[in-house]
Every structure is written in C-alpha cells, then in structure tokens.
Image (tube, rainbow, N blue to C red):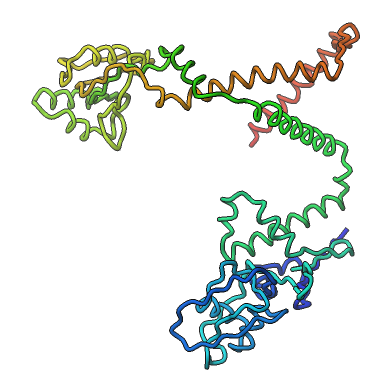
Length: 425
C-alpha cells in the first residue's frame, strides 16, 4: 500500500510531502509566539535610542518585530536591548524596550528561533497550540508545544546539550516526528499485534517492575553508620596494605642485532635513558611506552610471572644500580634482551581509613543488600503462602537416538552449507 504523509504547520497552512522535510522548511514555517508567564523582562544598557512599550495580550516577539522593525526576523534585536530570564515567555503588562528610528529591515536577516513554538494565550486561559500537523493513512495527527517541551525535558542532560541550538532543536523535532511516523508505519504493518513482540514487551515491563520494587524494598532500606565502616576497616586492615613497589628504566629489545648495539652503547658509558630514546620504536616489554621510553612505572613483586627474573633482579638492586650484563629472557617463542637501572622504591604501607572508605562503603552496601534480599524474599514467601509441589514438576522428554541423530545431521549440514558460502565469498 502506498502511504501518503503530509506535514503542515498551523500558522502557515503549508503542506508538503515527506521528502521535502528539511531544517530550512522548519525554520521558515515554525511561528514564534511567546506565551503569557511571570514577568521576566529586564532592560539592558543600550547604545541606541529606545522607547518603552507595554506587552499586550496576544503579542509575540515575532509580530512585535514586524511592527517596529519591519521584519519578524528582527525579533533578536529585542534580546540586545532586554534581558529575558526565560526567552520563551513574555507577559501582558511587561515593558519592552524598542529602538527608535530603526530602519525597516535593519540589521542582518535573522532566522526564526527554533527553540520557541507558538502557544496561543488569552488573558484568562491558555491554549496548547499545535506546532505541526501530519497525516498517515488518511488520518490527521498533530504535535503540540507541550508535547515537544515534555519530550525535550525528558532527555538526559547530555542530549539536551547536544540540541542546545536552533539547528539542534530543529533536528530533535525532526527526530520526534520520524519516531512517530515509524510507529504509525509499524502499526499499519500489524506489528502492534505481533504476539512475539507483545511477549517481549511484557517481559521487559515485568523486569522494570521488579527492578523498581527491588530499589524500594532493598536499595532504599540499606543503611549503615560511619562506625560500622570503621569497625570493618579495623577488622580487615590487612586487606588495605599498599604493596612495596619499584620503578626502573629498562631497554628491552627483541631484535638481537639492535640489542647488541644497545648493549655496546651501554658499555661505552651512554646514559640508559638516551639508549631508550634511541630505540624507542623498537622497545618491547617493560618500559616500551612511546611517551616516556624506558620508564617501567611502579610495579609490585607479583607484577608478572613471565618476567619474574627481571622483577626479582630489580627488587634486589640498590637504587641507582644497573645490570652488569645484558639479561636474556625466554618468554614463549620470543627472546628478550634487557639492560636496566633501578630508579625508585616505595616501601609497603598501611592505607588510611579515608583512602579506602569508598571501597569499604561498596563492600558494606553489598553485604547489607544480600542480607536484605534474603529477608525480603522470606517476607514475600510468607505473605504469598508459597507451597511447592516438586513431585509435580514435569520432566522434559529426551530426544530418541534417531531424533538426536537427525538433529545432529541437520546441524552438520547447515554448518557445511555456511562454510561453503564463506569459501565461495
């Protein structure tokens, strides 16, 4: 079935096919009308001669700009001379500063602001105006100002920031419209009655219900005191000990010829950091960072089982000590050639309570949540008057040897077909 989709903006009466939707048309057809609200206009020091006019019921910045500046697009001149704490709202009775003797069409042509949409207000009550209309399968739909604002406010903060511009809000309005059209298309295709989709939706709904219930019955009922945290720290101090660490400068190479060249430079008295810099693109293993060649960073005695000869040698050295001979390490199929110098050593120390408090909070919360879950399950079980009849649980039928063979053959055939396709490609 061919689907016709029309969009029209209430203020202009324009209608256009889906393929003509574009930011330009949104900009040209969304009418600026700022609704009644609490008075929030403050004059700003201006270098232009101005006069003050009173906002009347039904006024918008767009039509006021047309009245005083000759073009609705010049509404932004008002922002240069007035401060709007909420630029989407003006209020009858507010005073607005307007420039005197402004030539018709003065200033650059300014596009219609995208973040504000027409809301019709009277002195007594408001009407939530539609900002666009669209049609699907002969039925008309519309999107109102409040629908757009609500949808925008429901976005996470980072997404609101992504759309925090005129073009951005147009983009988001288009995305909203696109989603609504996709849903209508899905319903037209009958997907809203698909049993598999409905079952998945029900499962997801149930999951959300249980998650929310768990938040209320478990997470929100977990409490602990600072004294409990301190008691845990005192009882588990041995778990919060910072191990002894060392740092070295190491030139570790796989290429034997380059390793011989590096070792020759070392024997001739070259500084080990200079050697590391020279071979920085060839370093492999400890100290192979390109930003600081040779620097291993701090590591503990159990840093790596494969590199234990190197680790032990560094820990046994005095600070400033260097390797007497080039060390060779067989790791897997590779042979590493190393020369190194011990730079620093930090002794083990007891971490303070403040340093590990966040970790202890995590542990205590997990413990208390487990305890609360067990208690809560007992409560639910009692209230539900649970009775189990394990003897009535059905035993799944096992496939016969013939069925199992057929299933295996089918899987083998599918695998063979897939392999054949891959080889062909």
